[in-house]
Amino acid sequence: MTRKVKALLVFCEGPHDVAFVRRLLKHCLGFTKVEWRFSEFPAPFNSLFRASVERHAARDLSLDMAHKFFLPDRVLQREDVIALVFNSGGKPKRQTIVDFLSDFLPLFEQATVFPDRADAVVTQARFLFLYDADAKGIEKVRKDVKTAFGSIDSEPWLIDDWQLDAADPTGAIAGDKALYVWSGKGGQGTLEDILMSVLCESKPELAKDVKQC
Image (cartoon, rainbow, N blue to C red; front, side, top):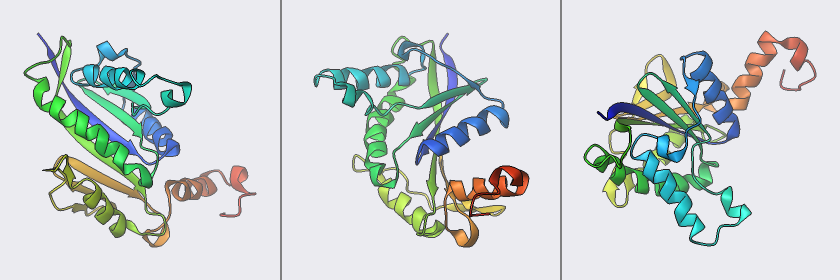
């Protein structure tokens, strides 16, 4: 019998976010790292990732192109949940995520019917976007994300209004999508600003020469 699993797709702005999320999932939420071959992923990821590489290879694969596959940087698992953590390359490259979703969403809809010889199939998917507030501020980032992912292949996608987290206004949920905006004082800044503040407070001896302290 094909196992049913849930998937969390985390789209990070850069490598620092990926590293932080990986540690959070592992040390705070009990996820463990997995290193599967494409064929070992649950459907539809098993066929999606394979097709991505084959499509690029058909274009005369070069070493430079090998770094341009939109594949997860890290994959972790806890019981029947897998977390796929992507480095999207920053705000200017949101189209990369749109292109990925354009490939993924139709396959996800078909996966439970045609699992493509997989031992497991994704029956539920959730999507988390992580972005820095930078100088734009949290609200502007929310609006930009809503605009960028409002539709995929002309089909409505991120259509629900953001529901803010009362305990932490930097987080918001819209149906099966969520957004967390890294920000410092005044609703601006980056993940690095948050981490530096924590470092300055918890390990002042390590950060004593850093101007931000």
